[in-house]
View 1: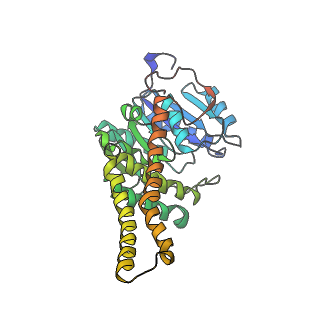
View 2 (view 1 turned 90 degrees about the horizontal axis):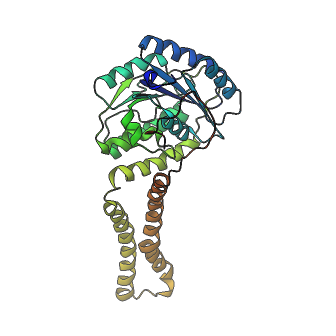
View 3 (view 1 turned 90 degrees about the vertical axis):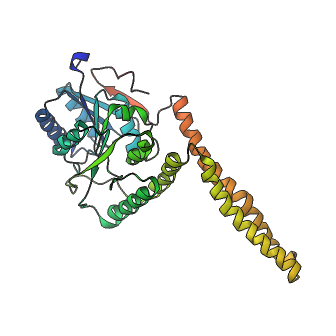
Length: 330
């Protein structure tokens, strides 16, 4: 894999965080499946700041297999930056992303590749029969998926899974941040790419500890708001901000109108209602400005990352026998 004649057709990206118990088996399964696929491939393993033996095991696999690239992040940046690091390094025409905890079955990769061959640009996994904890994962995921389907009108059932396949041009289009890796189909829907999904098995974790908790729900909720803004209102923000302004300004105006009528019709003293008057003014001014400033800051930060070439991760080390693809690394 040292020259263009052996350039991989398929890149498989797997982020790991404290998965020492699953690394070897994940590699063995991937190697077996890709051997049956019969296409040139590369495995990009990203160590997202693990505190256990994950990186040392990945480094040993790298020494044994020239198709393996290992990216070691300096600290735990999170799944989205880890995936972006893999996307930046990938050279394949088709890029598959999946979790490293063995809850995604590598044996299903050929199904993703078959759908790509049918002409789709993104193939997303659908955990149709989920086996996860009802409170920590199933309920928040159900709520988030329902909200996303309503917000962006992308006809897939499961936005949250990492198990997806992409054409290369899709990956070149996106810039990830926050927890937005789960919302890639929504983010690129406005670009006209063809999206579909396939049912995948949802395997119960056998070894290791899950890194998912309720704390992620808060981040996902705010990312939902960001995705809706980016997908629906980025090119016409006045419709979004105007609606907020009308709602808050209308409420404040309503309060002020009641106070005015009360003053003239019922002789309400201004001193006794000064608090309501101030509230009306604040609703009309500060509330709308606060929300607009927050969302505009989201857009500004995205522009900063793109125009300044800033990455959302920091590599400590790269173990690879090839140079990154110039067109993809940003």
